[in-house]
Length: 220
Length: 220
DNA sequence: ACGGACCTCCCCCGCGCGGGGGAGACGATC
DNA sequence: GATCGTCTCCCCCGCGCGGGGGAGGTCCGT
Image (tube, rainbow over all chains, first blue to last red; front, side, top):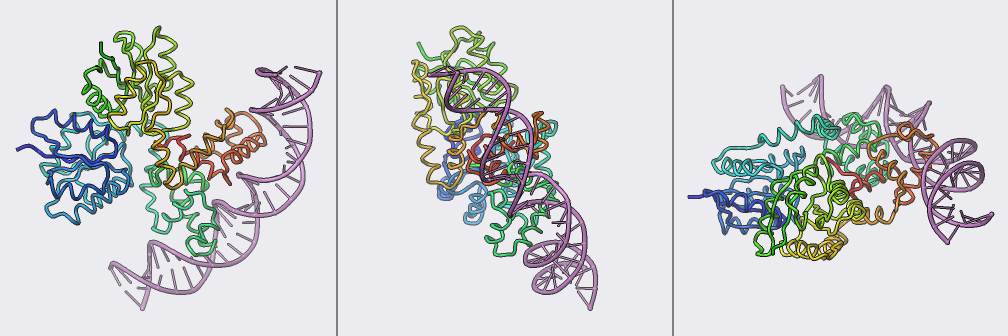
């Protein structure tokens, strides 16, 4: 019997592409589609797919949250293949923590996409497929943002420091951050200094850039 | 005779999606694909498509540059339909200046994609299709970055101010920007002040945030 | 009971930043 | 020729920022 797949992506075009790629295979069948994470659980209950190909960035409920909700509330849950435009440390780790089984780049070649679906259906984990490593290498000899990603991945910010960085990335001053967190400005300065040191940033502007480049905060 | 289309996108998945959507129509035929802007011109010369569906962000040669090159070096050039993930003021204006005939969101519904291809093939301009306006409205009742986009769209930065903002968004200090542009630091301060005023930003951090949120600079 | 990580707050100090204002030079437009 | 926009440079001034220290508290694992 064929591998059944549920597609979850807010862009119809991506769904159509995945469907075209997967249905070209005799042993894979696309049994349904959803445009946002909130629609996934009832669909999974009804269709019982083997694999859910899940986009990360979606309205209402993102792929990470949807994965978490799915594994928590459905018994004998399907395998989760997280689909994203590029490897993003926060997403990768978030997806792993949420319990995803595989990770797939949208820019992967059709054969790799098919391969990924088959693998996770067989129970294999596909956390760092070749395409991800290839892309990482590609970015490595590129210019800068790979460095930003690495820095933030290695930075190991504490929870508080992460909060502060997020507020910095919203354009708040130290005083405003202090008010928001209900602490003193000197406290915020300490956190900011720690963030700058861990990120290797010279000033808050560079820290915010690193936050965007690494995907720690997302535009849009 | 059918409308012939050439697909240009670096992601095979998107190409497959467009192909699936367009080939479902009896009067549209996909005659070729290219994965980067550099491959477009010889393909157009050989295949003579009616419409080129062109991605904006591509390796080697982006969609804007490829459009410009195409219109400059091919006689009786095809209609150019610029395809992008979301409306981006810089891209829109860049595409218009380059001579694109239409603008299309990847997240548009299949029927809209088909409609857009037919329209530009007939010689119509499709600069602000309904899907763009709908998305804009969608973002409007969202949180913040619509505001950033608007600000930057209305800002009408001069060329120099745009250069300065780009360097700000790379984390350079005023002195470093001055060195890079071979001008005095006082000059840079003037440009920075102008940028802040036009963007309604309080400091360079907020300006950089606006640059990211509006797509003026792109992460990754 | 002890070290260690984390959050909290405090001091001093230098400096880059941004606001305010002004001004000269150039090109395009009218 | 006059006007306008743009790019260039200059002044003064206040202040937020970031570096350098130090120090108290809680909680946790050993």
